[in-house]
Image (cartoon, rainbow, N blue to C red; front, side, top):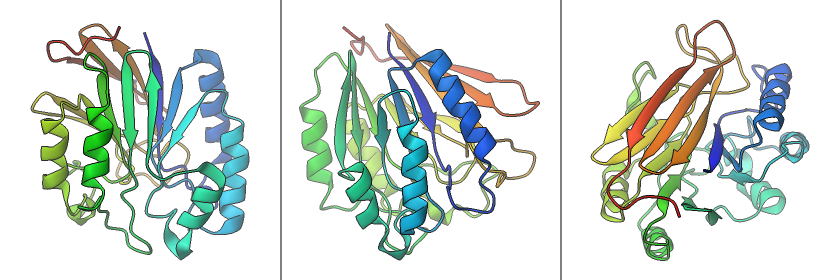
Length: 249
């Protein structure tokens, strides 16, 4: 069944960026050969052209298809124009056998806070309405929809998180992939699993956190999330049973 790598917050151009960790992540992707890499925003540190160019060189080396959404750092200095030029639309759909992804930009120019916005809701609704009935439905955005423990002040969840959670639940979404606060965490919300990625490639972690990424496996009846750490902390695994009928074909 499909396997996905979930990375976020690589922050190319930051003084905290550790290229050796991105090298290790690329090596892990080459070894495990996932069907997709989800990169949930903050590719750059300040959205500057040279940072985008360097991020593009790194991302082009990833030996798998990549689904990318911008983060708040990517939209600084009108950086979203570089994102669109180098990586394409900020709102997109991606399909794997039995799994259907919808990705949306939650960033606001030069603000840390995020928002999807009411003008985008109809596009998201229509995108999920086109999903095959039996497919696992996945939503990808940068800002997290629920507060994350140990992430400091929680003002940086989506400003319209309540409306988005209702929209996603109403449309039968099974999995949400986010980033932003550099804290890996997994929440179960009703029948939906929400996975927040840590930073995979920087030392800007909180408390005793470590750089990390997630490997997500889809199988009949369950989603399995493996949180993997670049350090001494042991990996963690979470198994989430799927709602009836959400079985890949």
